[in-house]
Amino acid sequence: MTNKETIDKALPSSYNFNNKWEELLENKEFIKVFLSDVLENYIVKQRWYGGKASHLKYIELAESFRIQKDGEVYYGLILEVNFDESFYQHYFLPIAFVSDESFAQDDRILPISIQNQEGFIIDAINLEAFRKVVFERILTAIPKDKTLVRYHKSELFKDCKYESSRYMGLEQSNTSIVYNEKYVLKFFRRIYSDRNPDYEMSRFLSDKKDFKNTPAYLGSVQIKDQDINITIGLMQEMVENQGDAWEYMLTEFHKVFSNLEYKRIDISQLPKTEDYGHLKISDVPAQIIDWVGLNVFTKIQTLAKRTAEMHIALGSEFEDTAFTPSHFNGDYEVWLKNRLLYQFQNRLNTIENSLHKLDGLALELANEFLEKKNLIRKRFVDFDWTKLKGERIRVHGDYHLGQILVKDDDFYILDFEGEPESTIRDRKVKQPPLKDIAGLFRSFHYAIYATIFNNSEFYKQNQEHLFEAGEILYQYLKSVFLETYVTNVQEANLNIGYSKERIFLLKYSLLEKAVYELGYELNSRPRWAVIPLKGISNIINN
Image 1: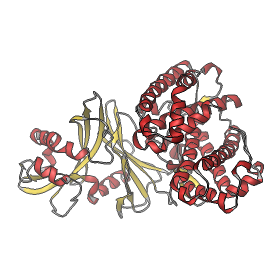
Image 2 (image 1 turned 135 degrees about the vertical axis):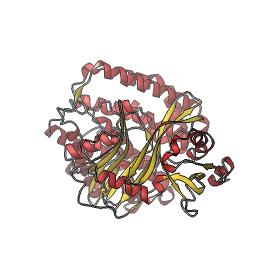
Image 3 (image 1 turned 180 degrees about the vertical axis):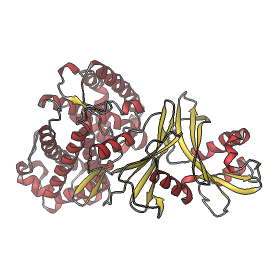
Image 4 (image 1 turned 60 degrees about the vertical axis):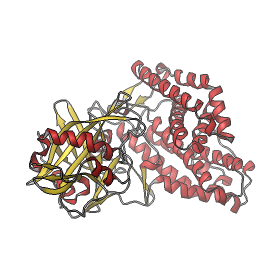
């Protein structure tokens, strides 16, 4: 049954409301029908809906407001979705009324008649007229806006007019619109009663610190009512690019693994390097350069430099308390341990219930995880803030190759929302910068193994030997990255701790990240669970 057929059964299209469109949300009968009879069927099918693993109980209208310009009126809805599991989530849904029978056939929410005019309520983002209104409201934003819906623009957003708009493409949790092929407006679908970290970080980095390697902040749309401050839209410069760093590295790593056969490389004879060591490219052995190629290492070096510059910018604020660096303390230690021990117990339960999905090396590593669970738990408990001299700063929080764009020979960092599983408060907690580095290293590890999995029929070596080569490659990537990163942040006086402290924090954060990943892989694609399991094994056995 299609979405449209479901809606038609829920409510006949001849259902008539006598209110004007501009007054429709004052009609309690409409609200009741819309929320209880129609919206549940619609919302659970949307890509941006994050409650698919839970059982929806009912939907309430938490807030509604007009998004308008001159005589054009659209409604923004804040929906509170309540679940049987005794929690709730909030979502943003803008709506419009259209009477054109041929319009938005795949994204209709409700067939309806308003004052005897037949039509449909749709997600307003489908409507170009709505997209134009939002663009023009940001472009004409006044500096001191005191209305419920507040539009803001930076000094960079000027001397332009609306020309065109289109969807950027399929996204999991948000919806992005490209304007004039120059600007991107991200509508946040899952929202929180606080300013979105992506808005805060983007505005801080590009507006206040002039960090060039992130899309420039151009404007935003906020809902401000007493103590509530909700970000629903973020406008940024569109960065012309050749794709993200994940796809780029997959292509490069495929060349690297193809070279094993092409250059007749004996994996057992490849020189290894010190774990968590630092290497200049000139110090990488000639055999490794011959195998991997110089390009990969120069790109890793550039990425390390951009990452360092991001952290230097984030660690250089001394007025705005949301961004001023902090030292480690007891409160942070308690917060960290509580969070990680809860997460670890959850993953422990998941792996115990998922052993039947695993085989080969994955099963072997899963059993090692269970055998050494007390050791892993102890690693998380053995966090003593009194031994740490470095500083904590606001960090990216979900830093991986998919959050980085490739432009020519450079990289641009985006999407500062933080870990999807974390609360909005947890995403804003100041962390050691090395937590971002750990996220990126885990992404290197993933890209290496994804290359092996996705291209195994092209390689002559068996999987065991490919994994061995992959681990050697991983160590060199880390070492080259760390040399550039640490040198740059230390020259800028960003305090990331002494050498042993850095290794401790990196290993701790790598373990945390791998345990976090394990839950997703076991639930979604068990074949890939070997990647975080291998990462965990590397850490606990080193």
